[in-house]
Amino acid sequence: MRNIFLLGFMGSGKSVIGEKLSRKLEREFIDMDRVIEERESMKISEIFAQYGEDYFRRKEGELLREIGGKGNAVVSTGGGIVMAEKNWKILKEGVTIYLKISPEEAWKRLEKVEDRPLLLQKDRKQFICNLLRTRQPYYEKADFTVLNEGRRVEEVIEEIARIIRHAGN
Image 1 (cartoon, rainbow, N blue to C red):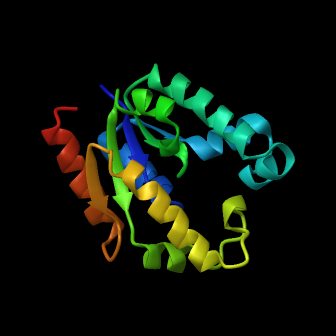
Image 2 (tube, rainbow, N blue to C red):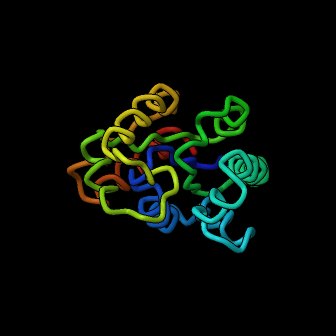
């Protein structure tokens, strides 16, 4: 069975949805950020501070290639994974699902978050809106888009499960 890759902006629910979806579908769950943190023995924010975003993106790409060879997992990806064209070759080997939230919802969910290095900006709200606008066309390359705003987690999981069943995966 092909991997299910959950794509979306920070705070879109990839980790929460992914973990519960994996249990429902009886698949392995892989949270890419958590795996990178474990392998590097430091938080993402520390990786960014010590080595920079390019280093993190390189580690993210290496892990994606590793996961791509496995199959049968639900994968919570990092929000910026969609920006590298080389990652799309691997993502498209699985089923890609974009968990969509509006800039306003992203702001609400991320307003007080302190452990996301990209959010350490003077005007966080404007930064979130700009970054989401920049990434939006890449997220929309996903096979399916599922709205994860104003809905219960269970509703979102049910919709994704239906999509996966109909996709024959």
